[in-house]
Length: 86
Image (cartoon, helix red, strand yellow):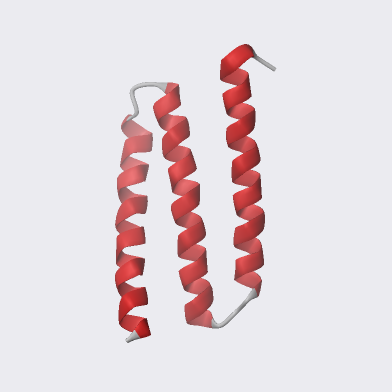
C-alpha cells in the first residue's frame, strides 16, 4: 500500500517538475524564472526523498537537506540583488 502511494507521489512530482521546467523556459520575466527555479529545487528535493525511500539509502536525505539550504541561500541572494543590488 505504501509503495502505491509513493509511486503516485513520484508521478505527481515528475509532472510538477516537467511543468515547472516548461514555465522556466517560457517565463516572461526574470522573476518568473527565479520562482520557477525555486519550485524546481523544491520538487527535486521531494524527488530525492522518494528515491531515498526506494533505494533504502539515508545518505540521500542528507544530500537533499544540503541542496535545500543551497537553494534557499541562492534565492535570497537573487532577491537581494533585484531589490537593491549587491
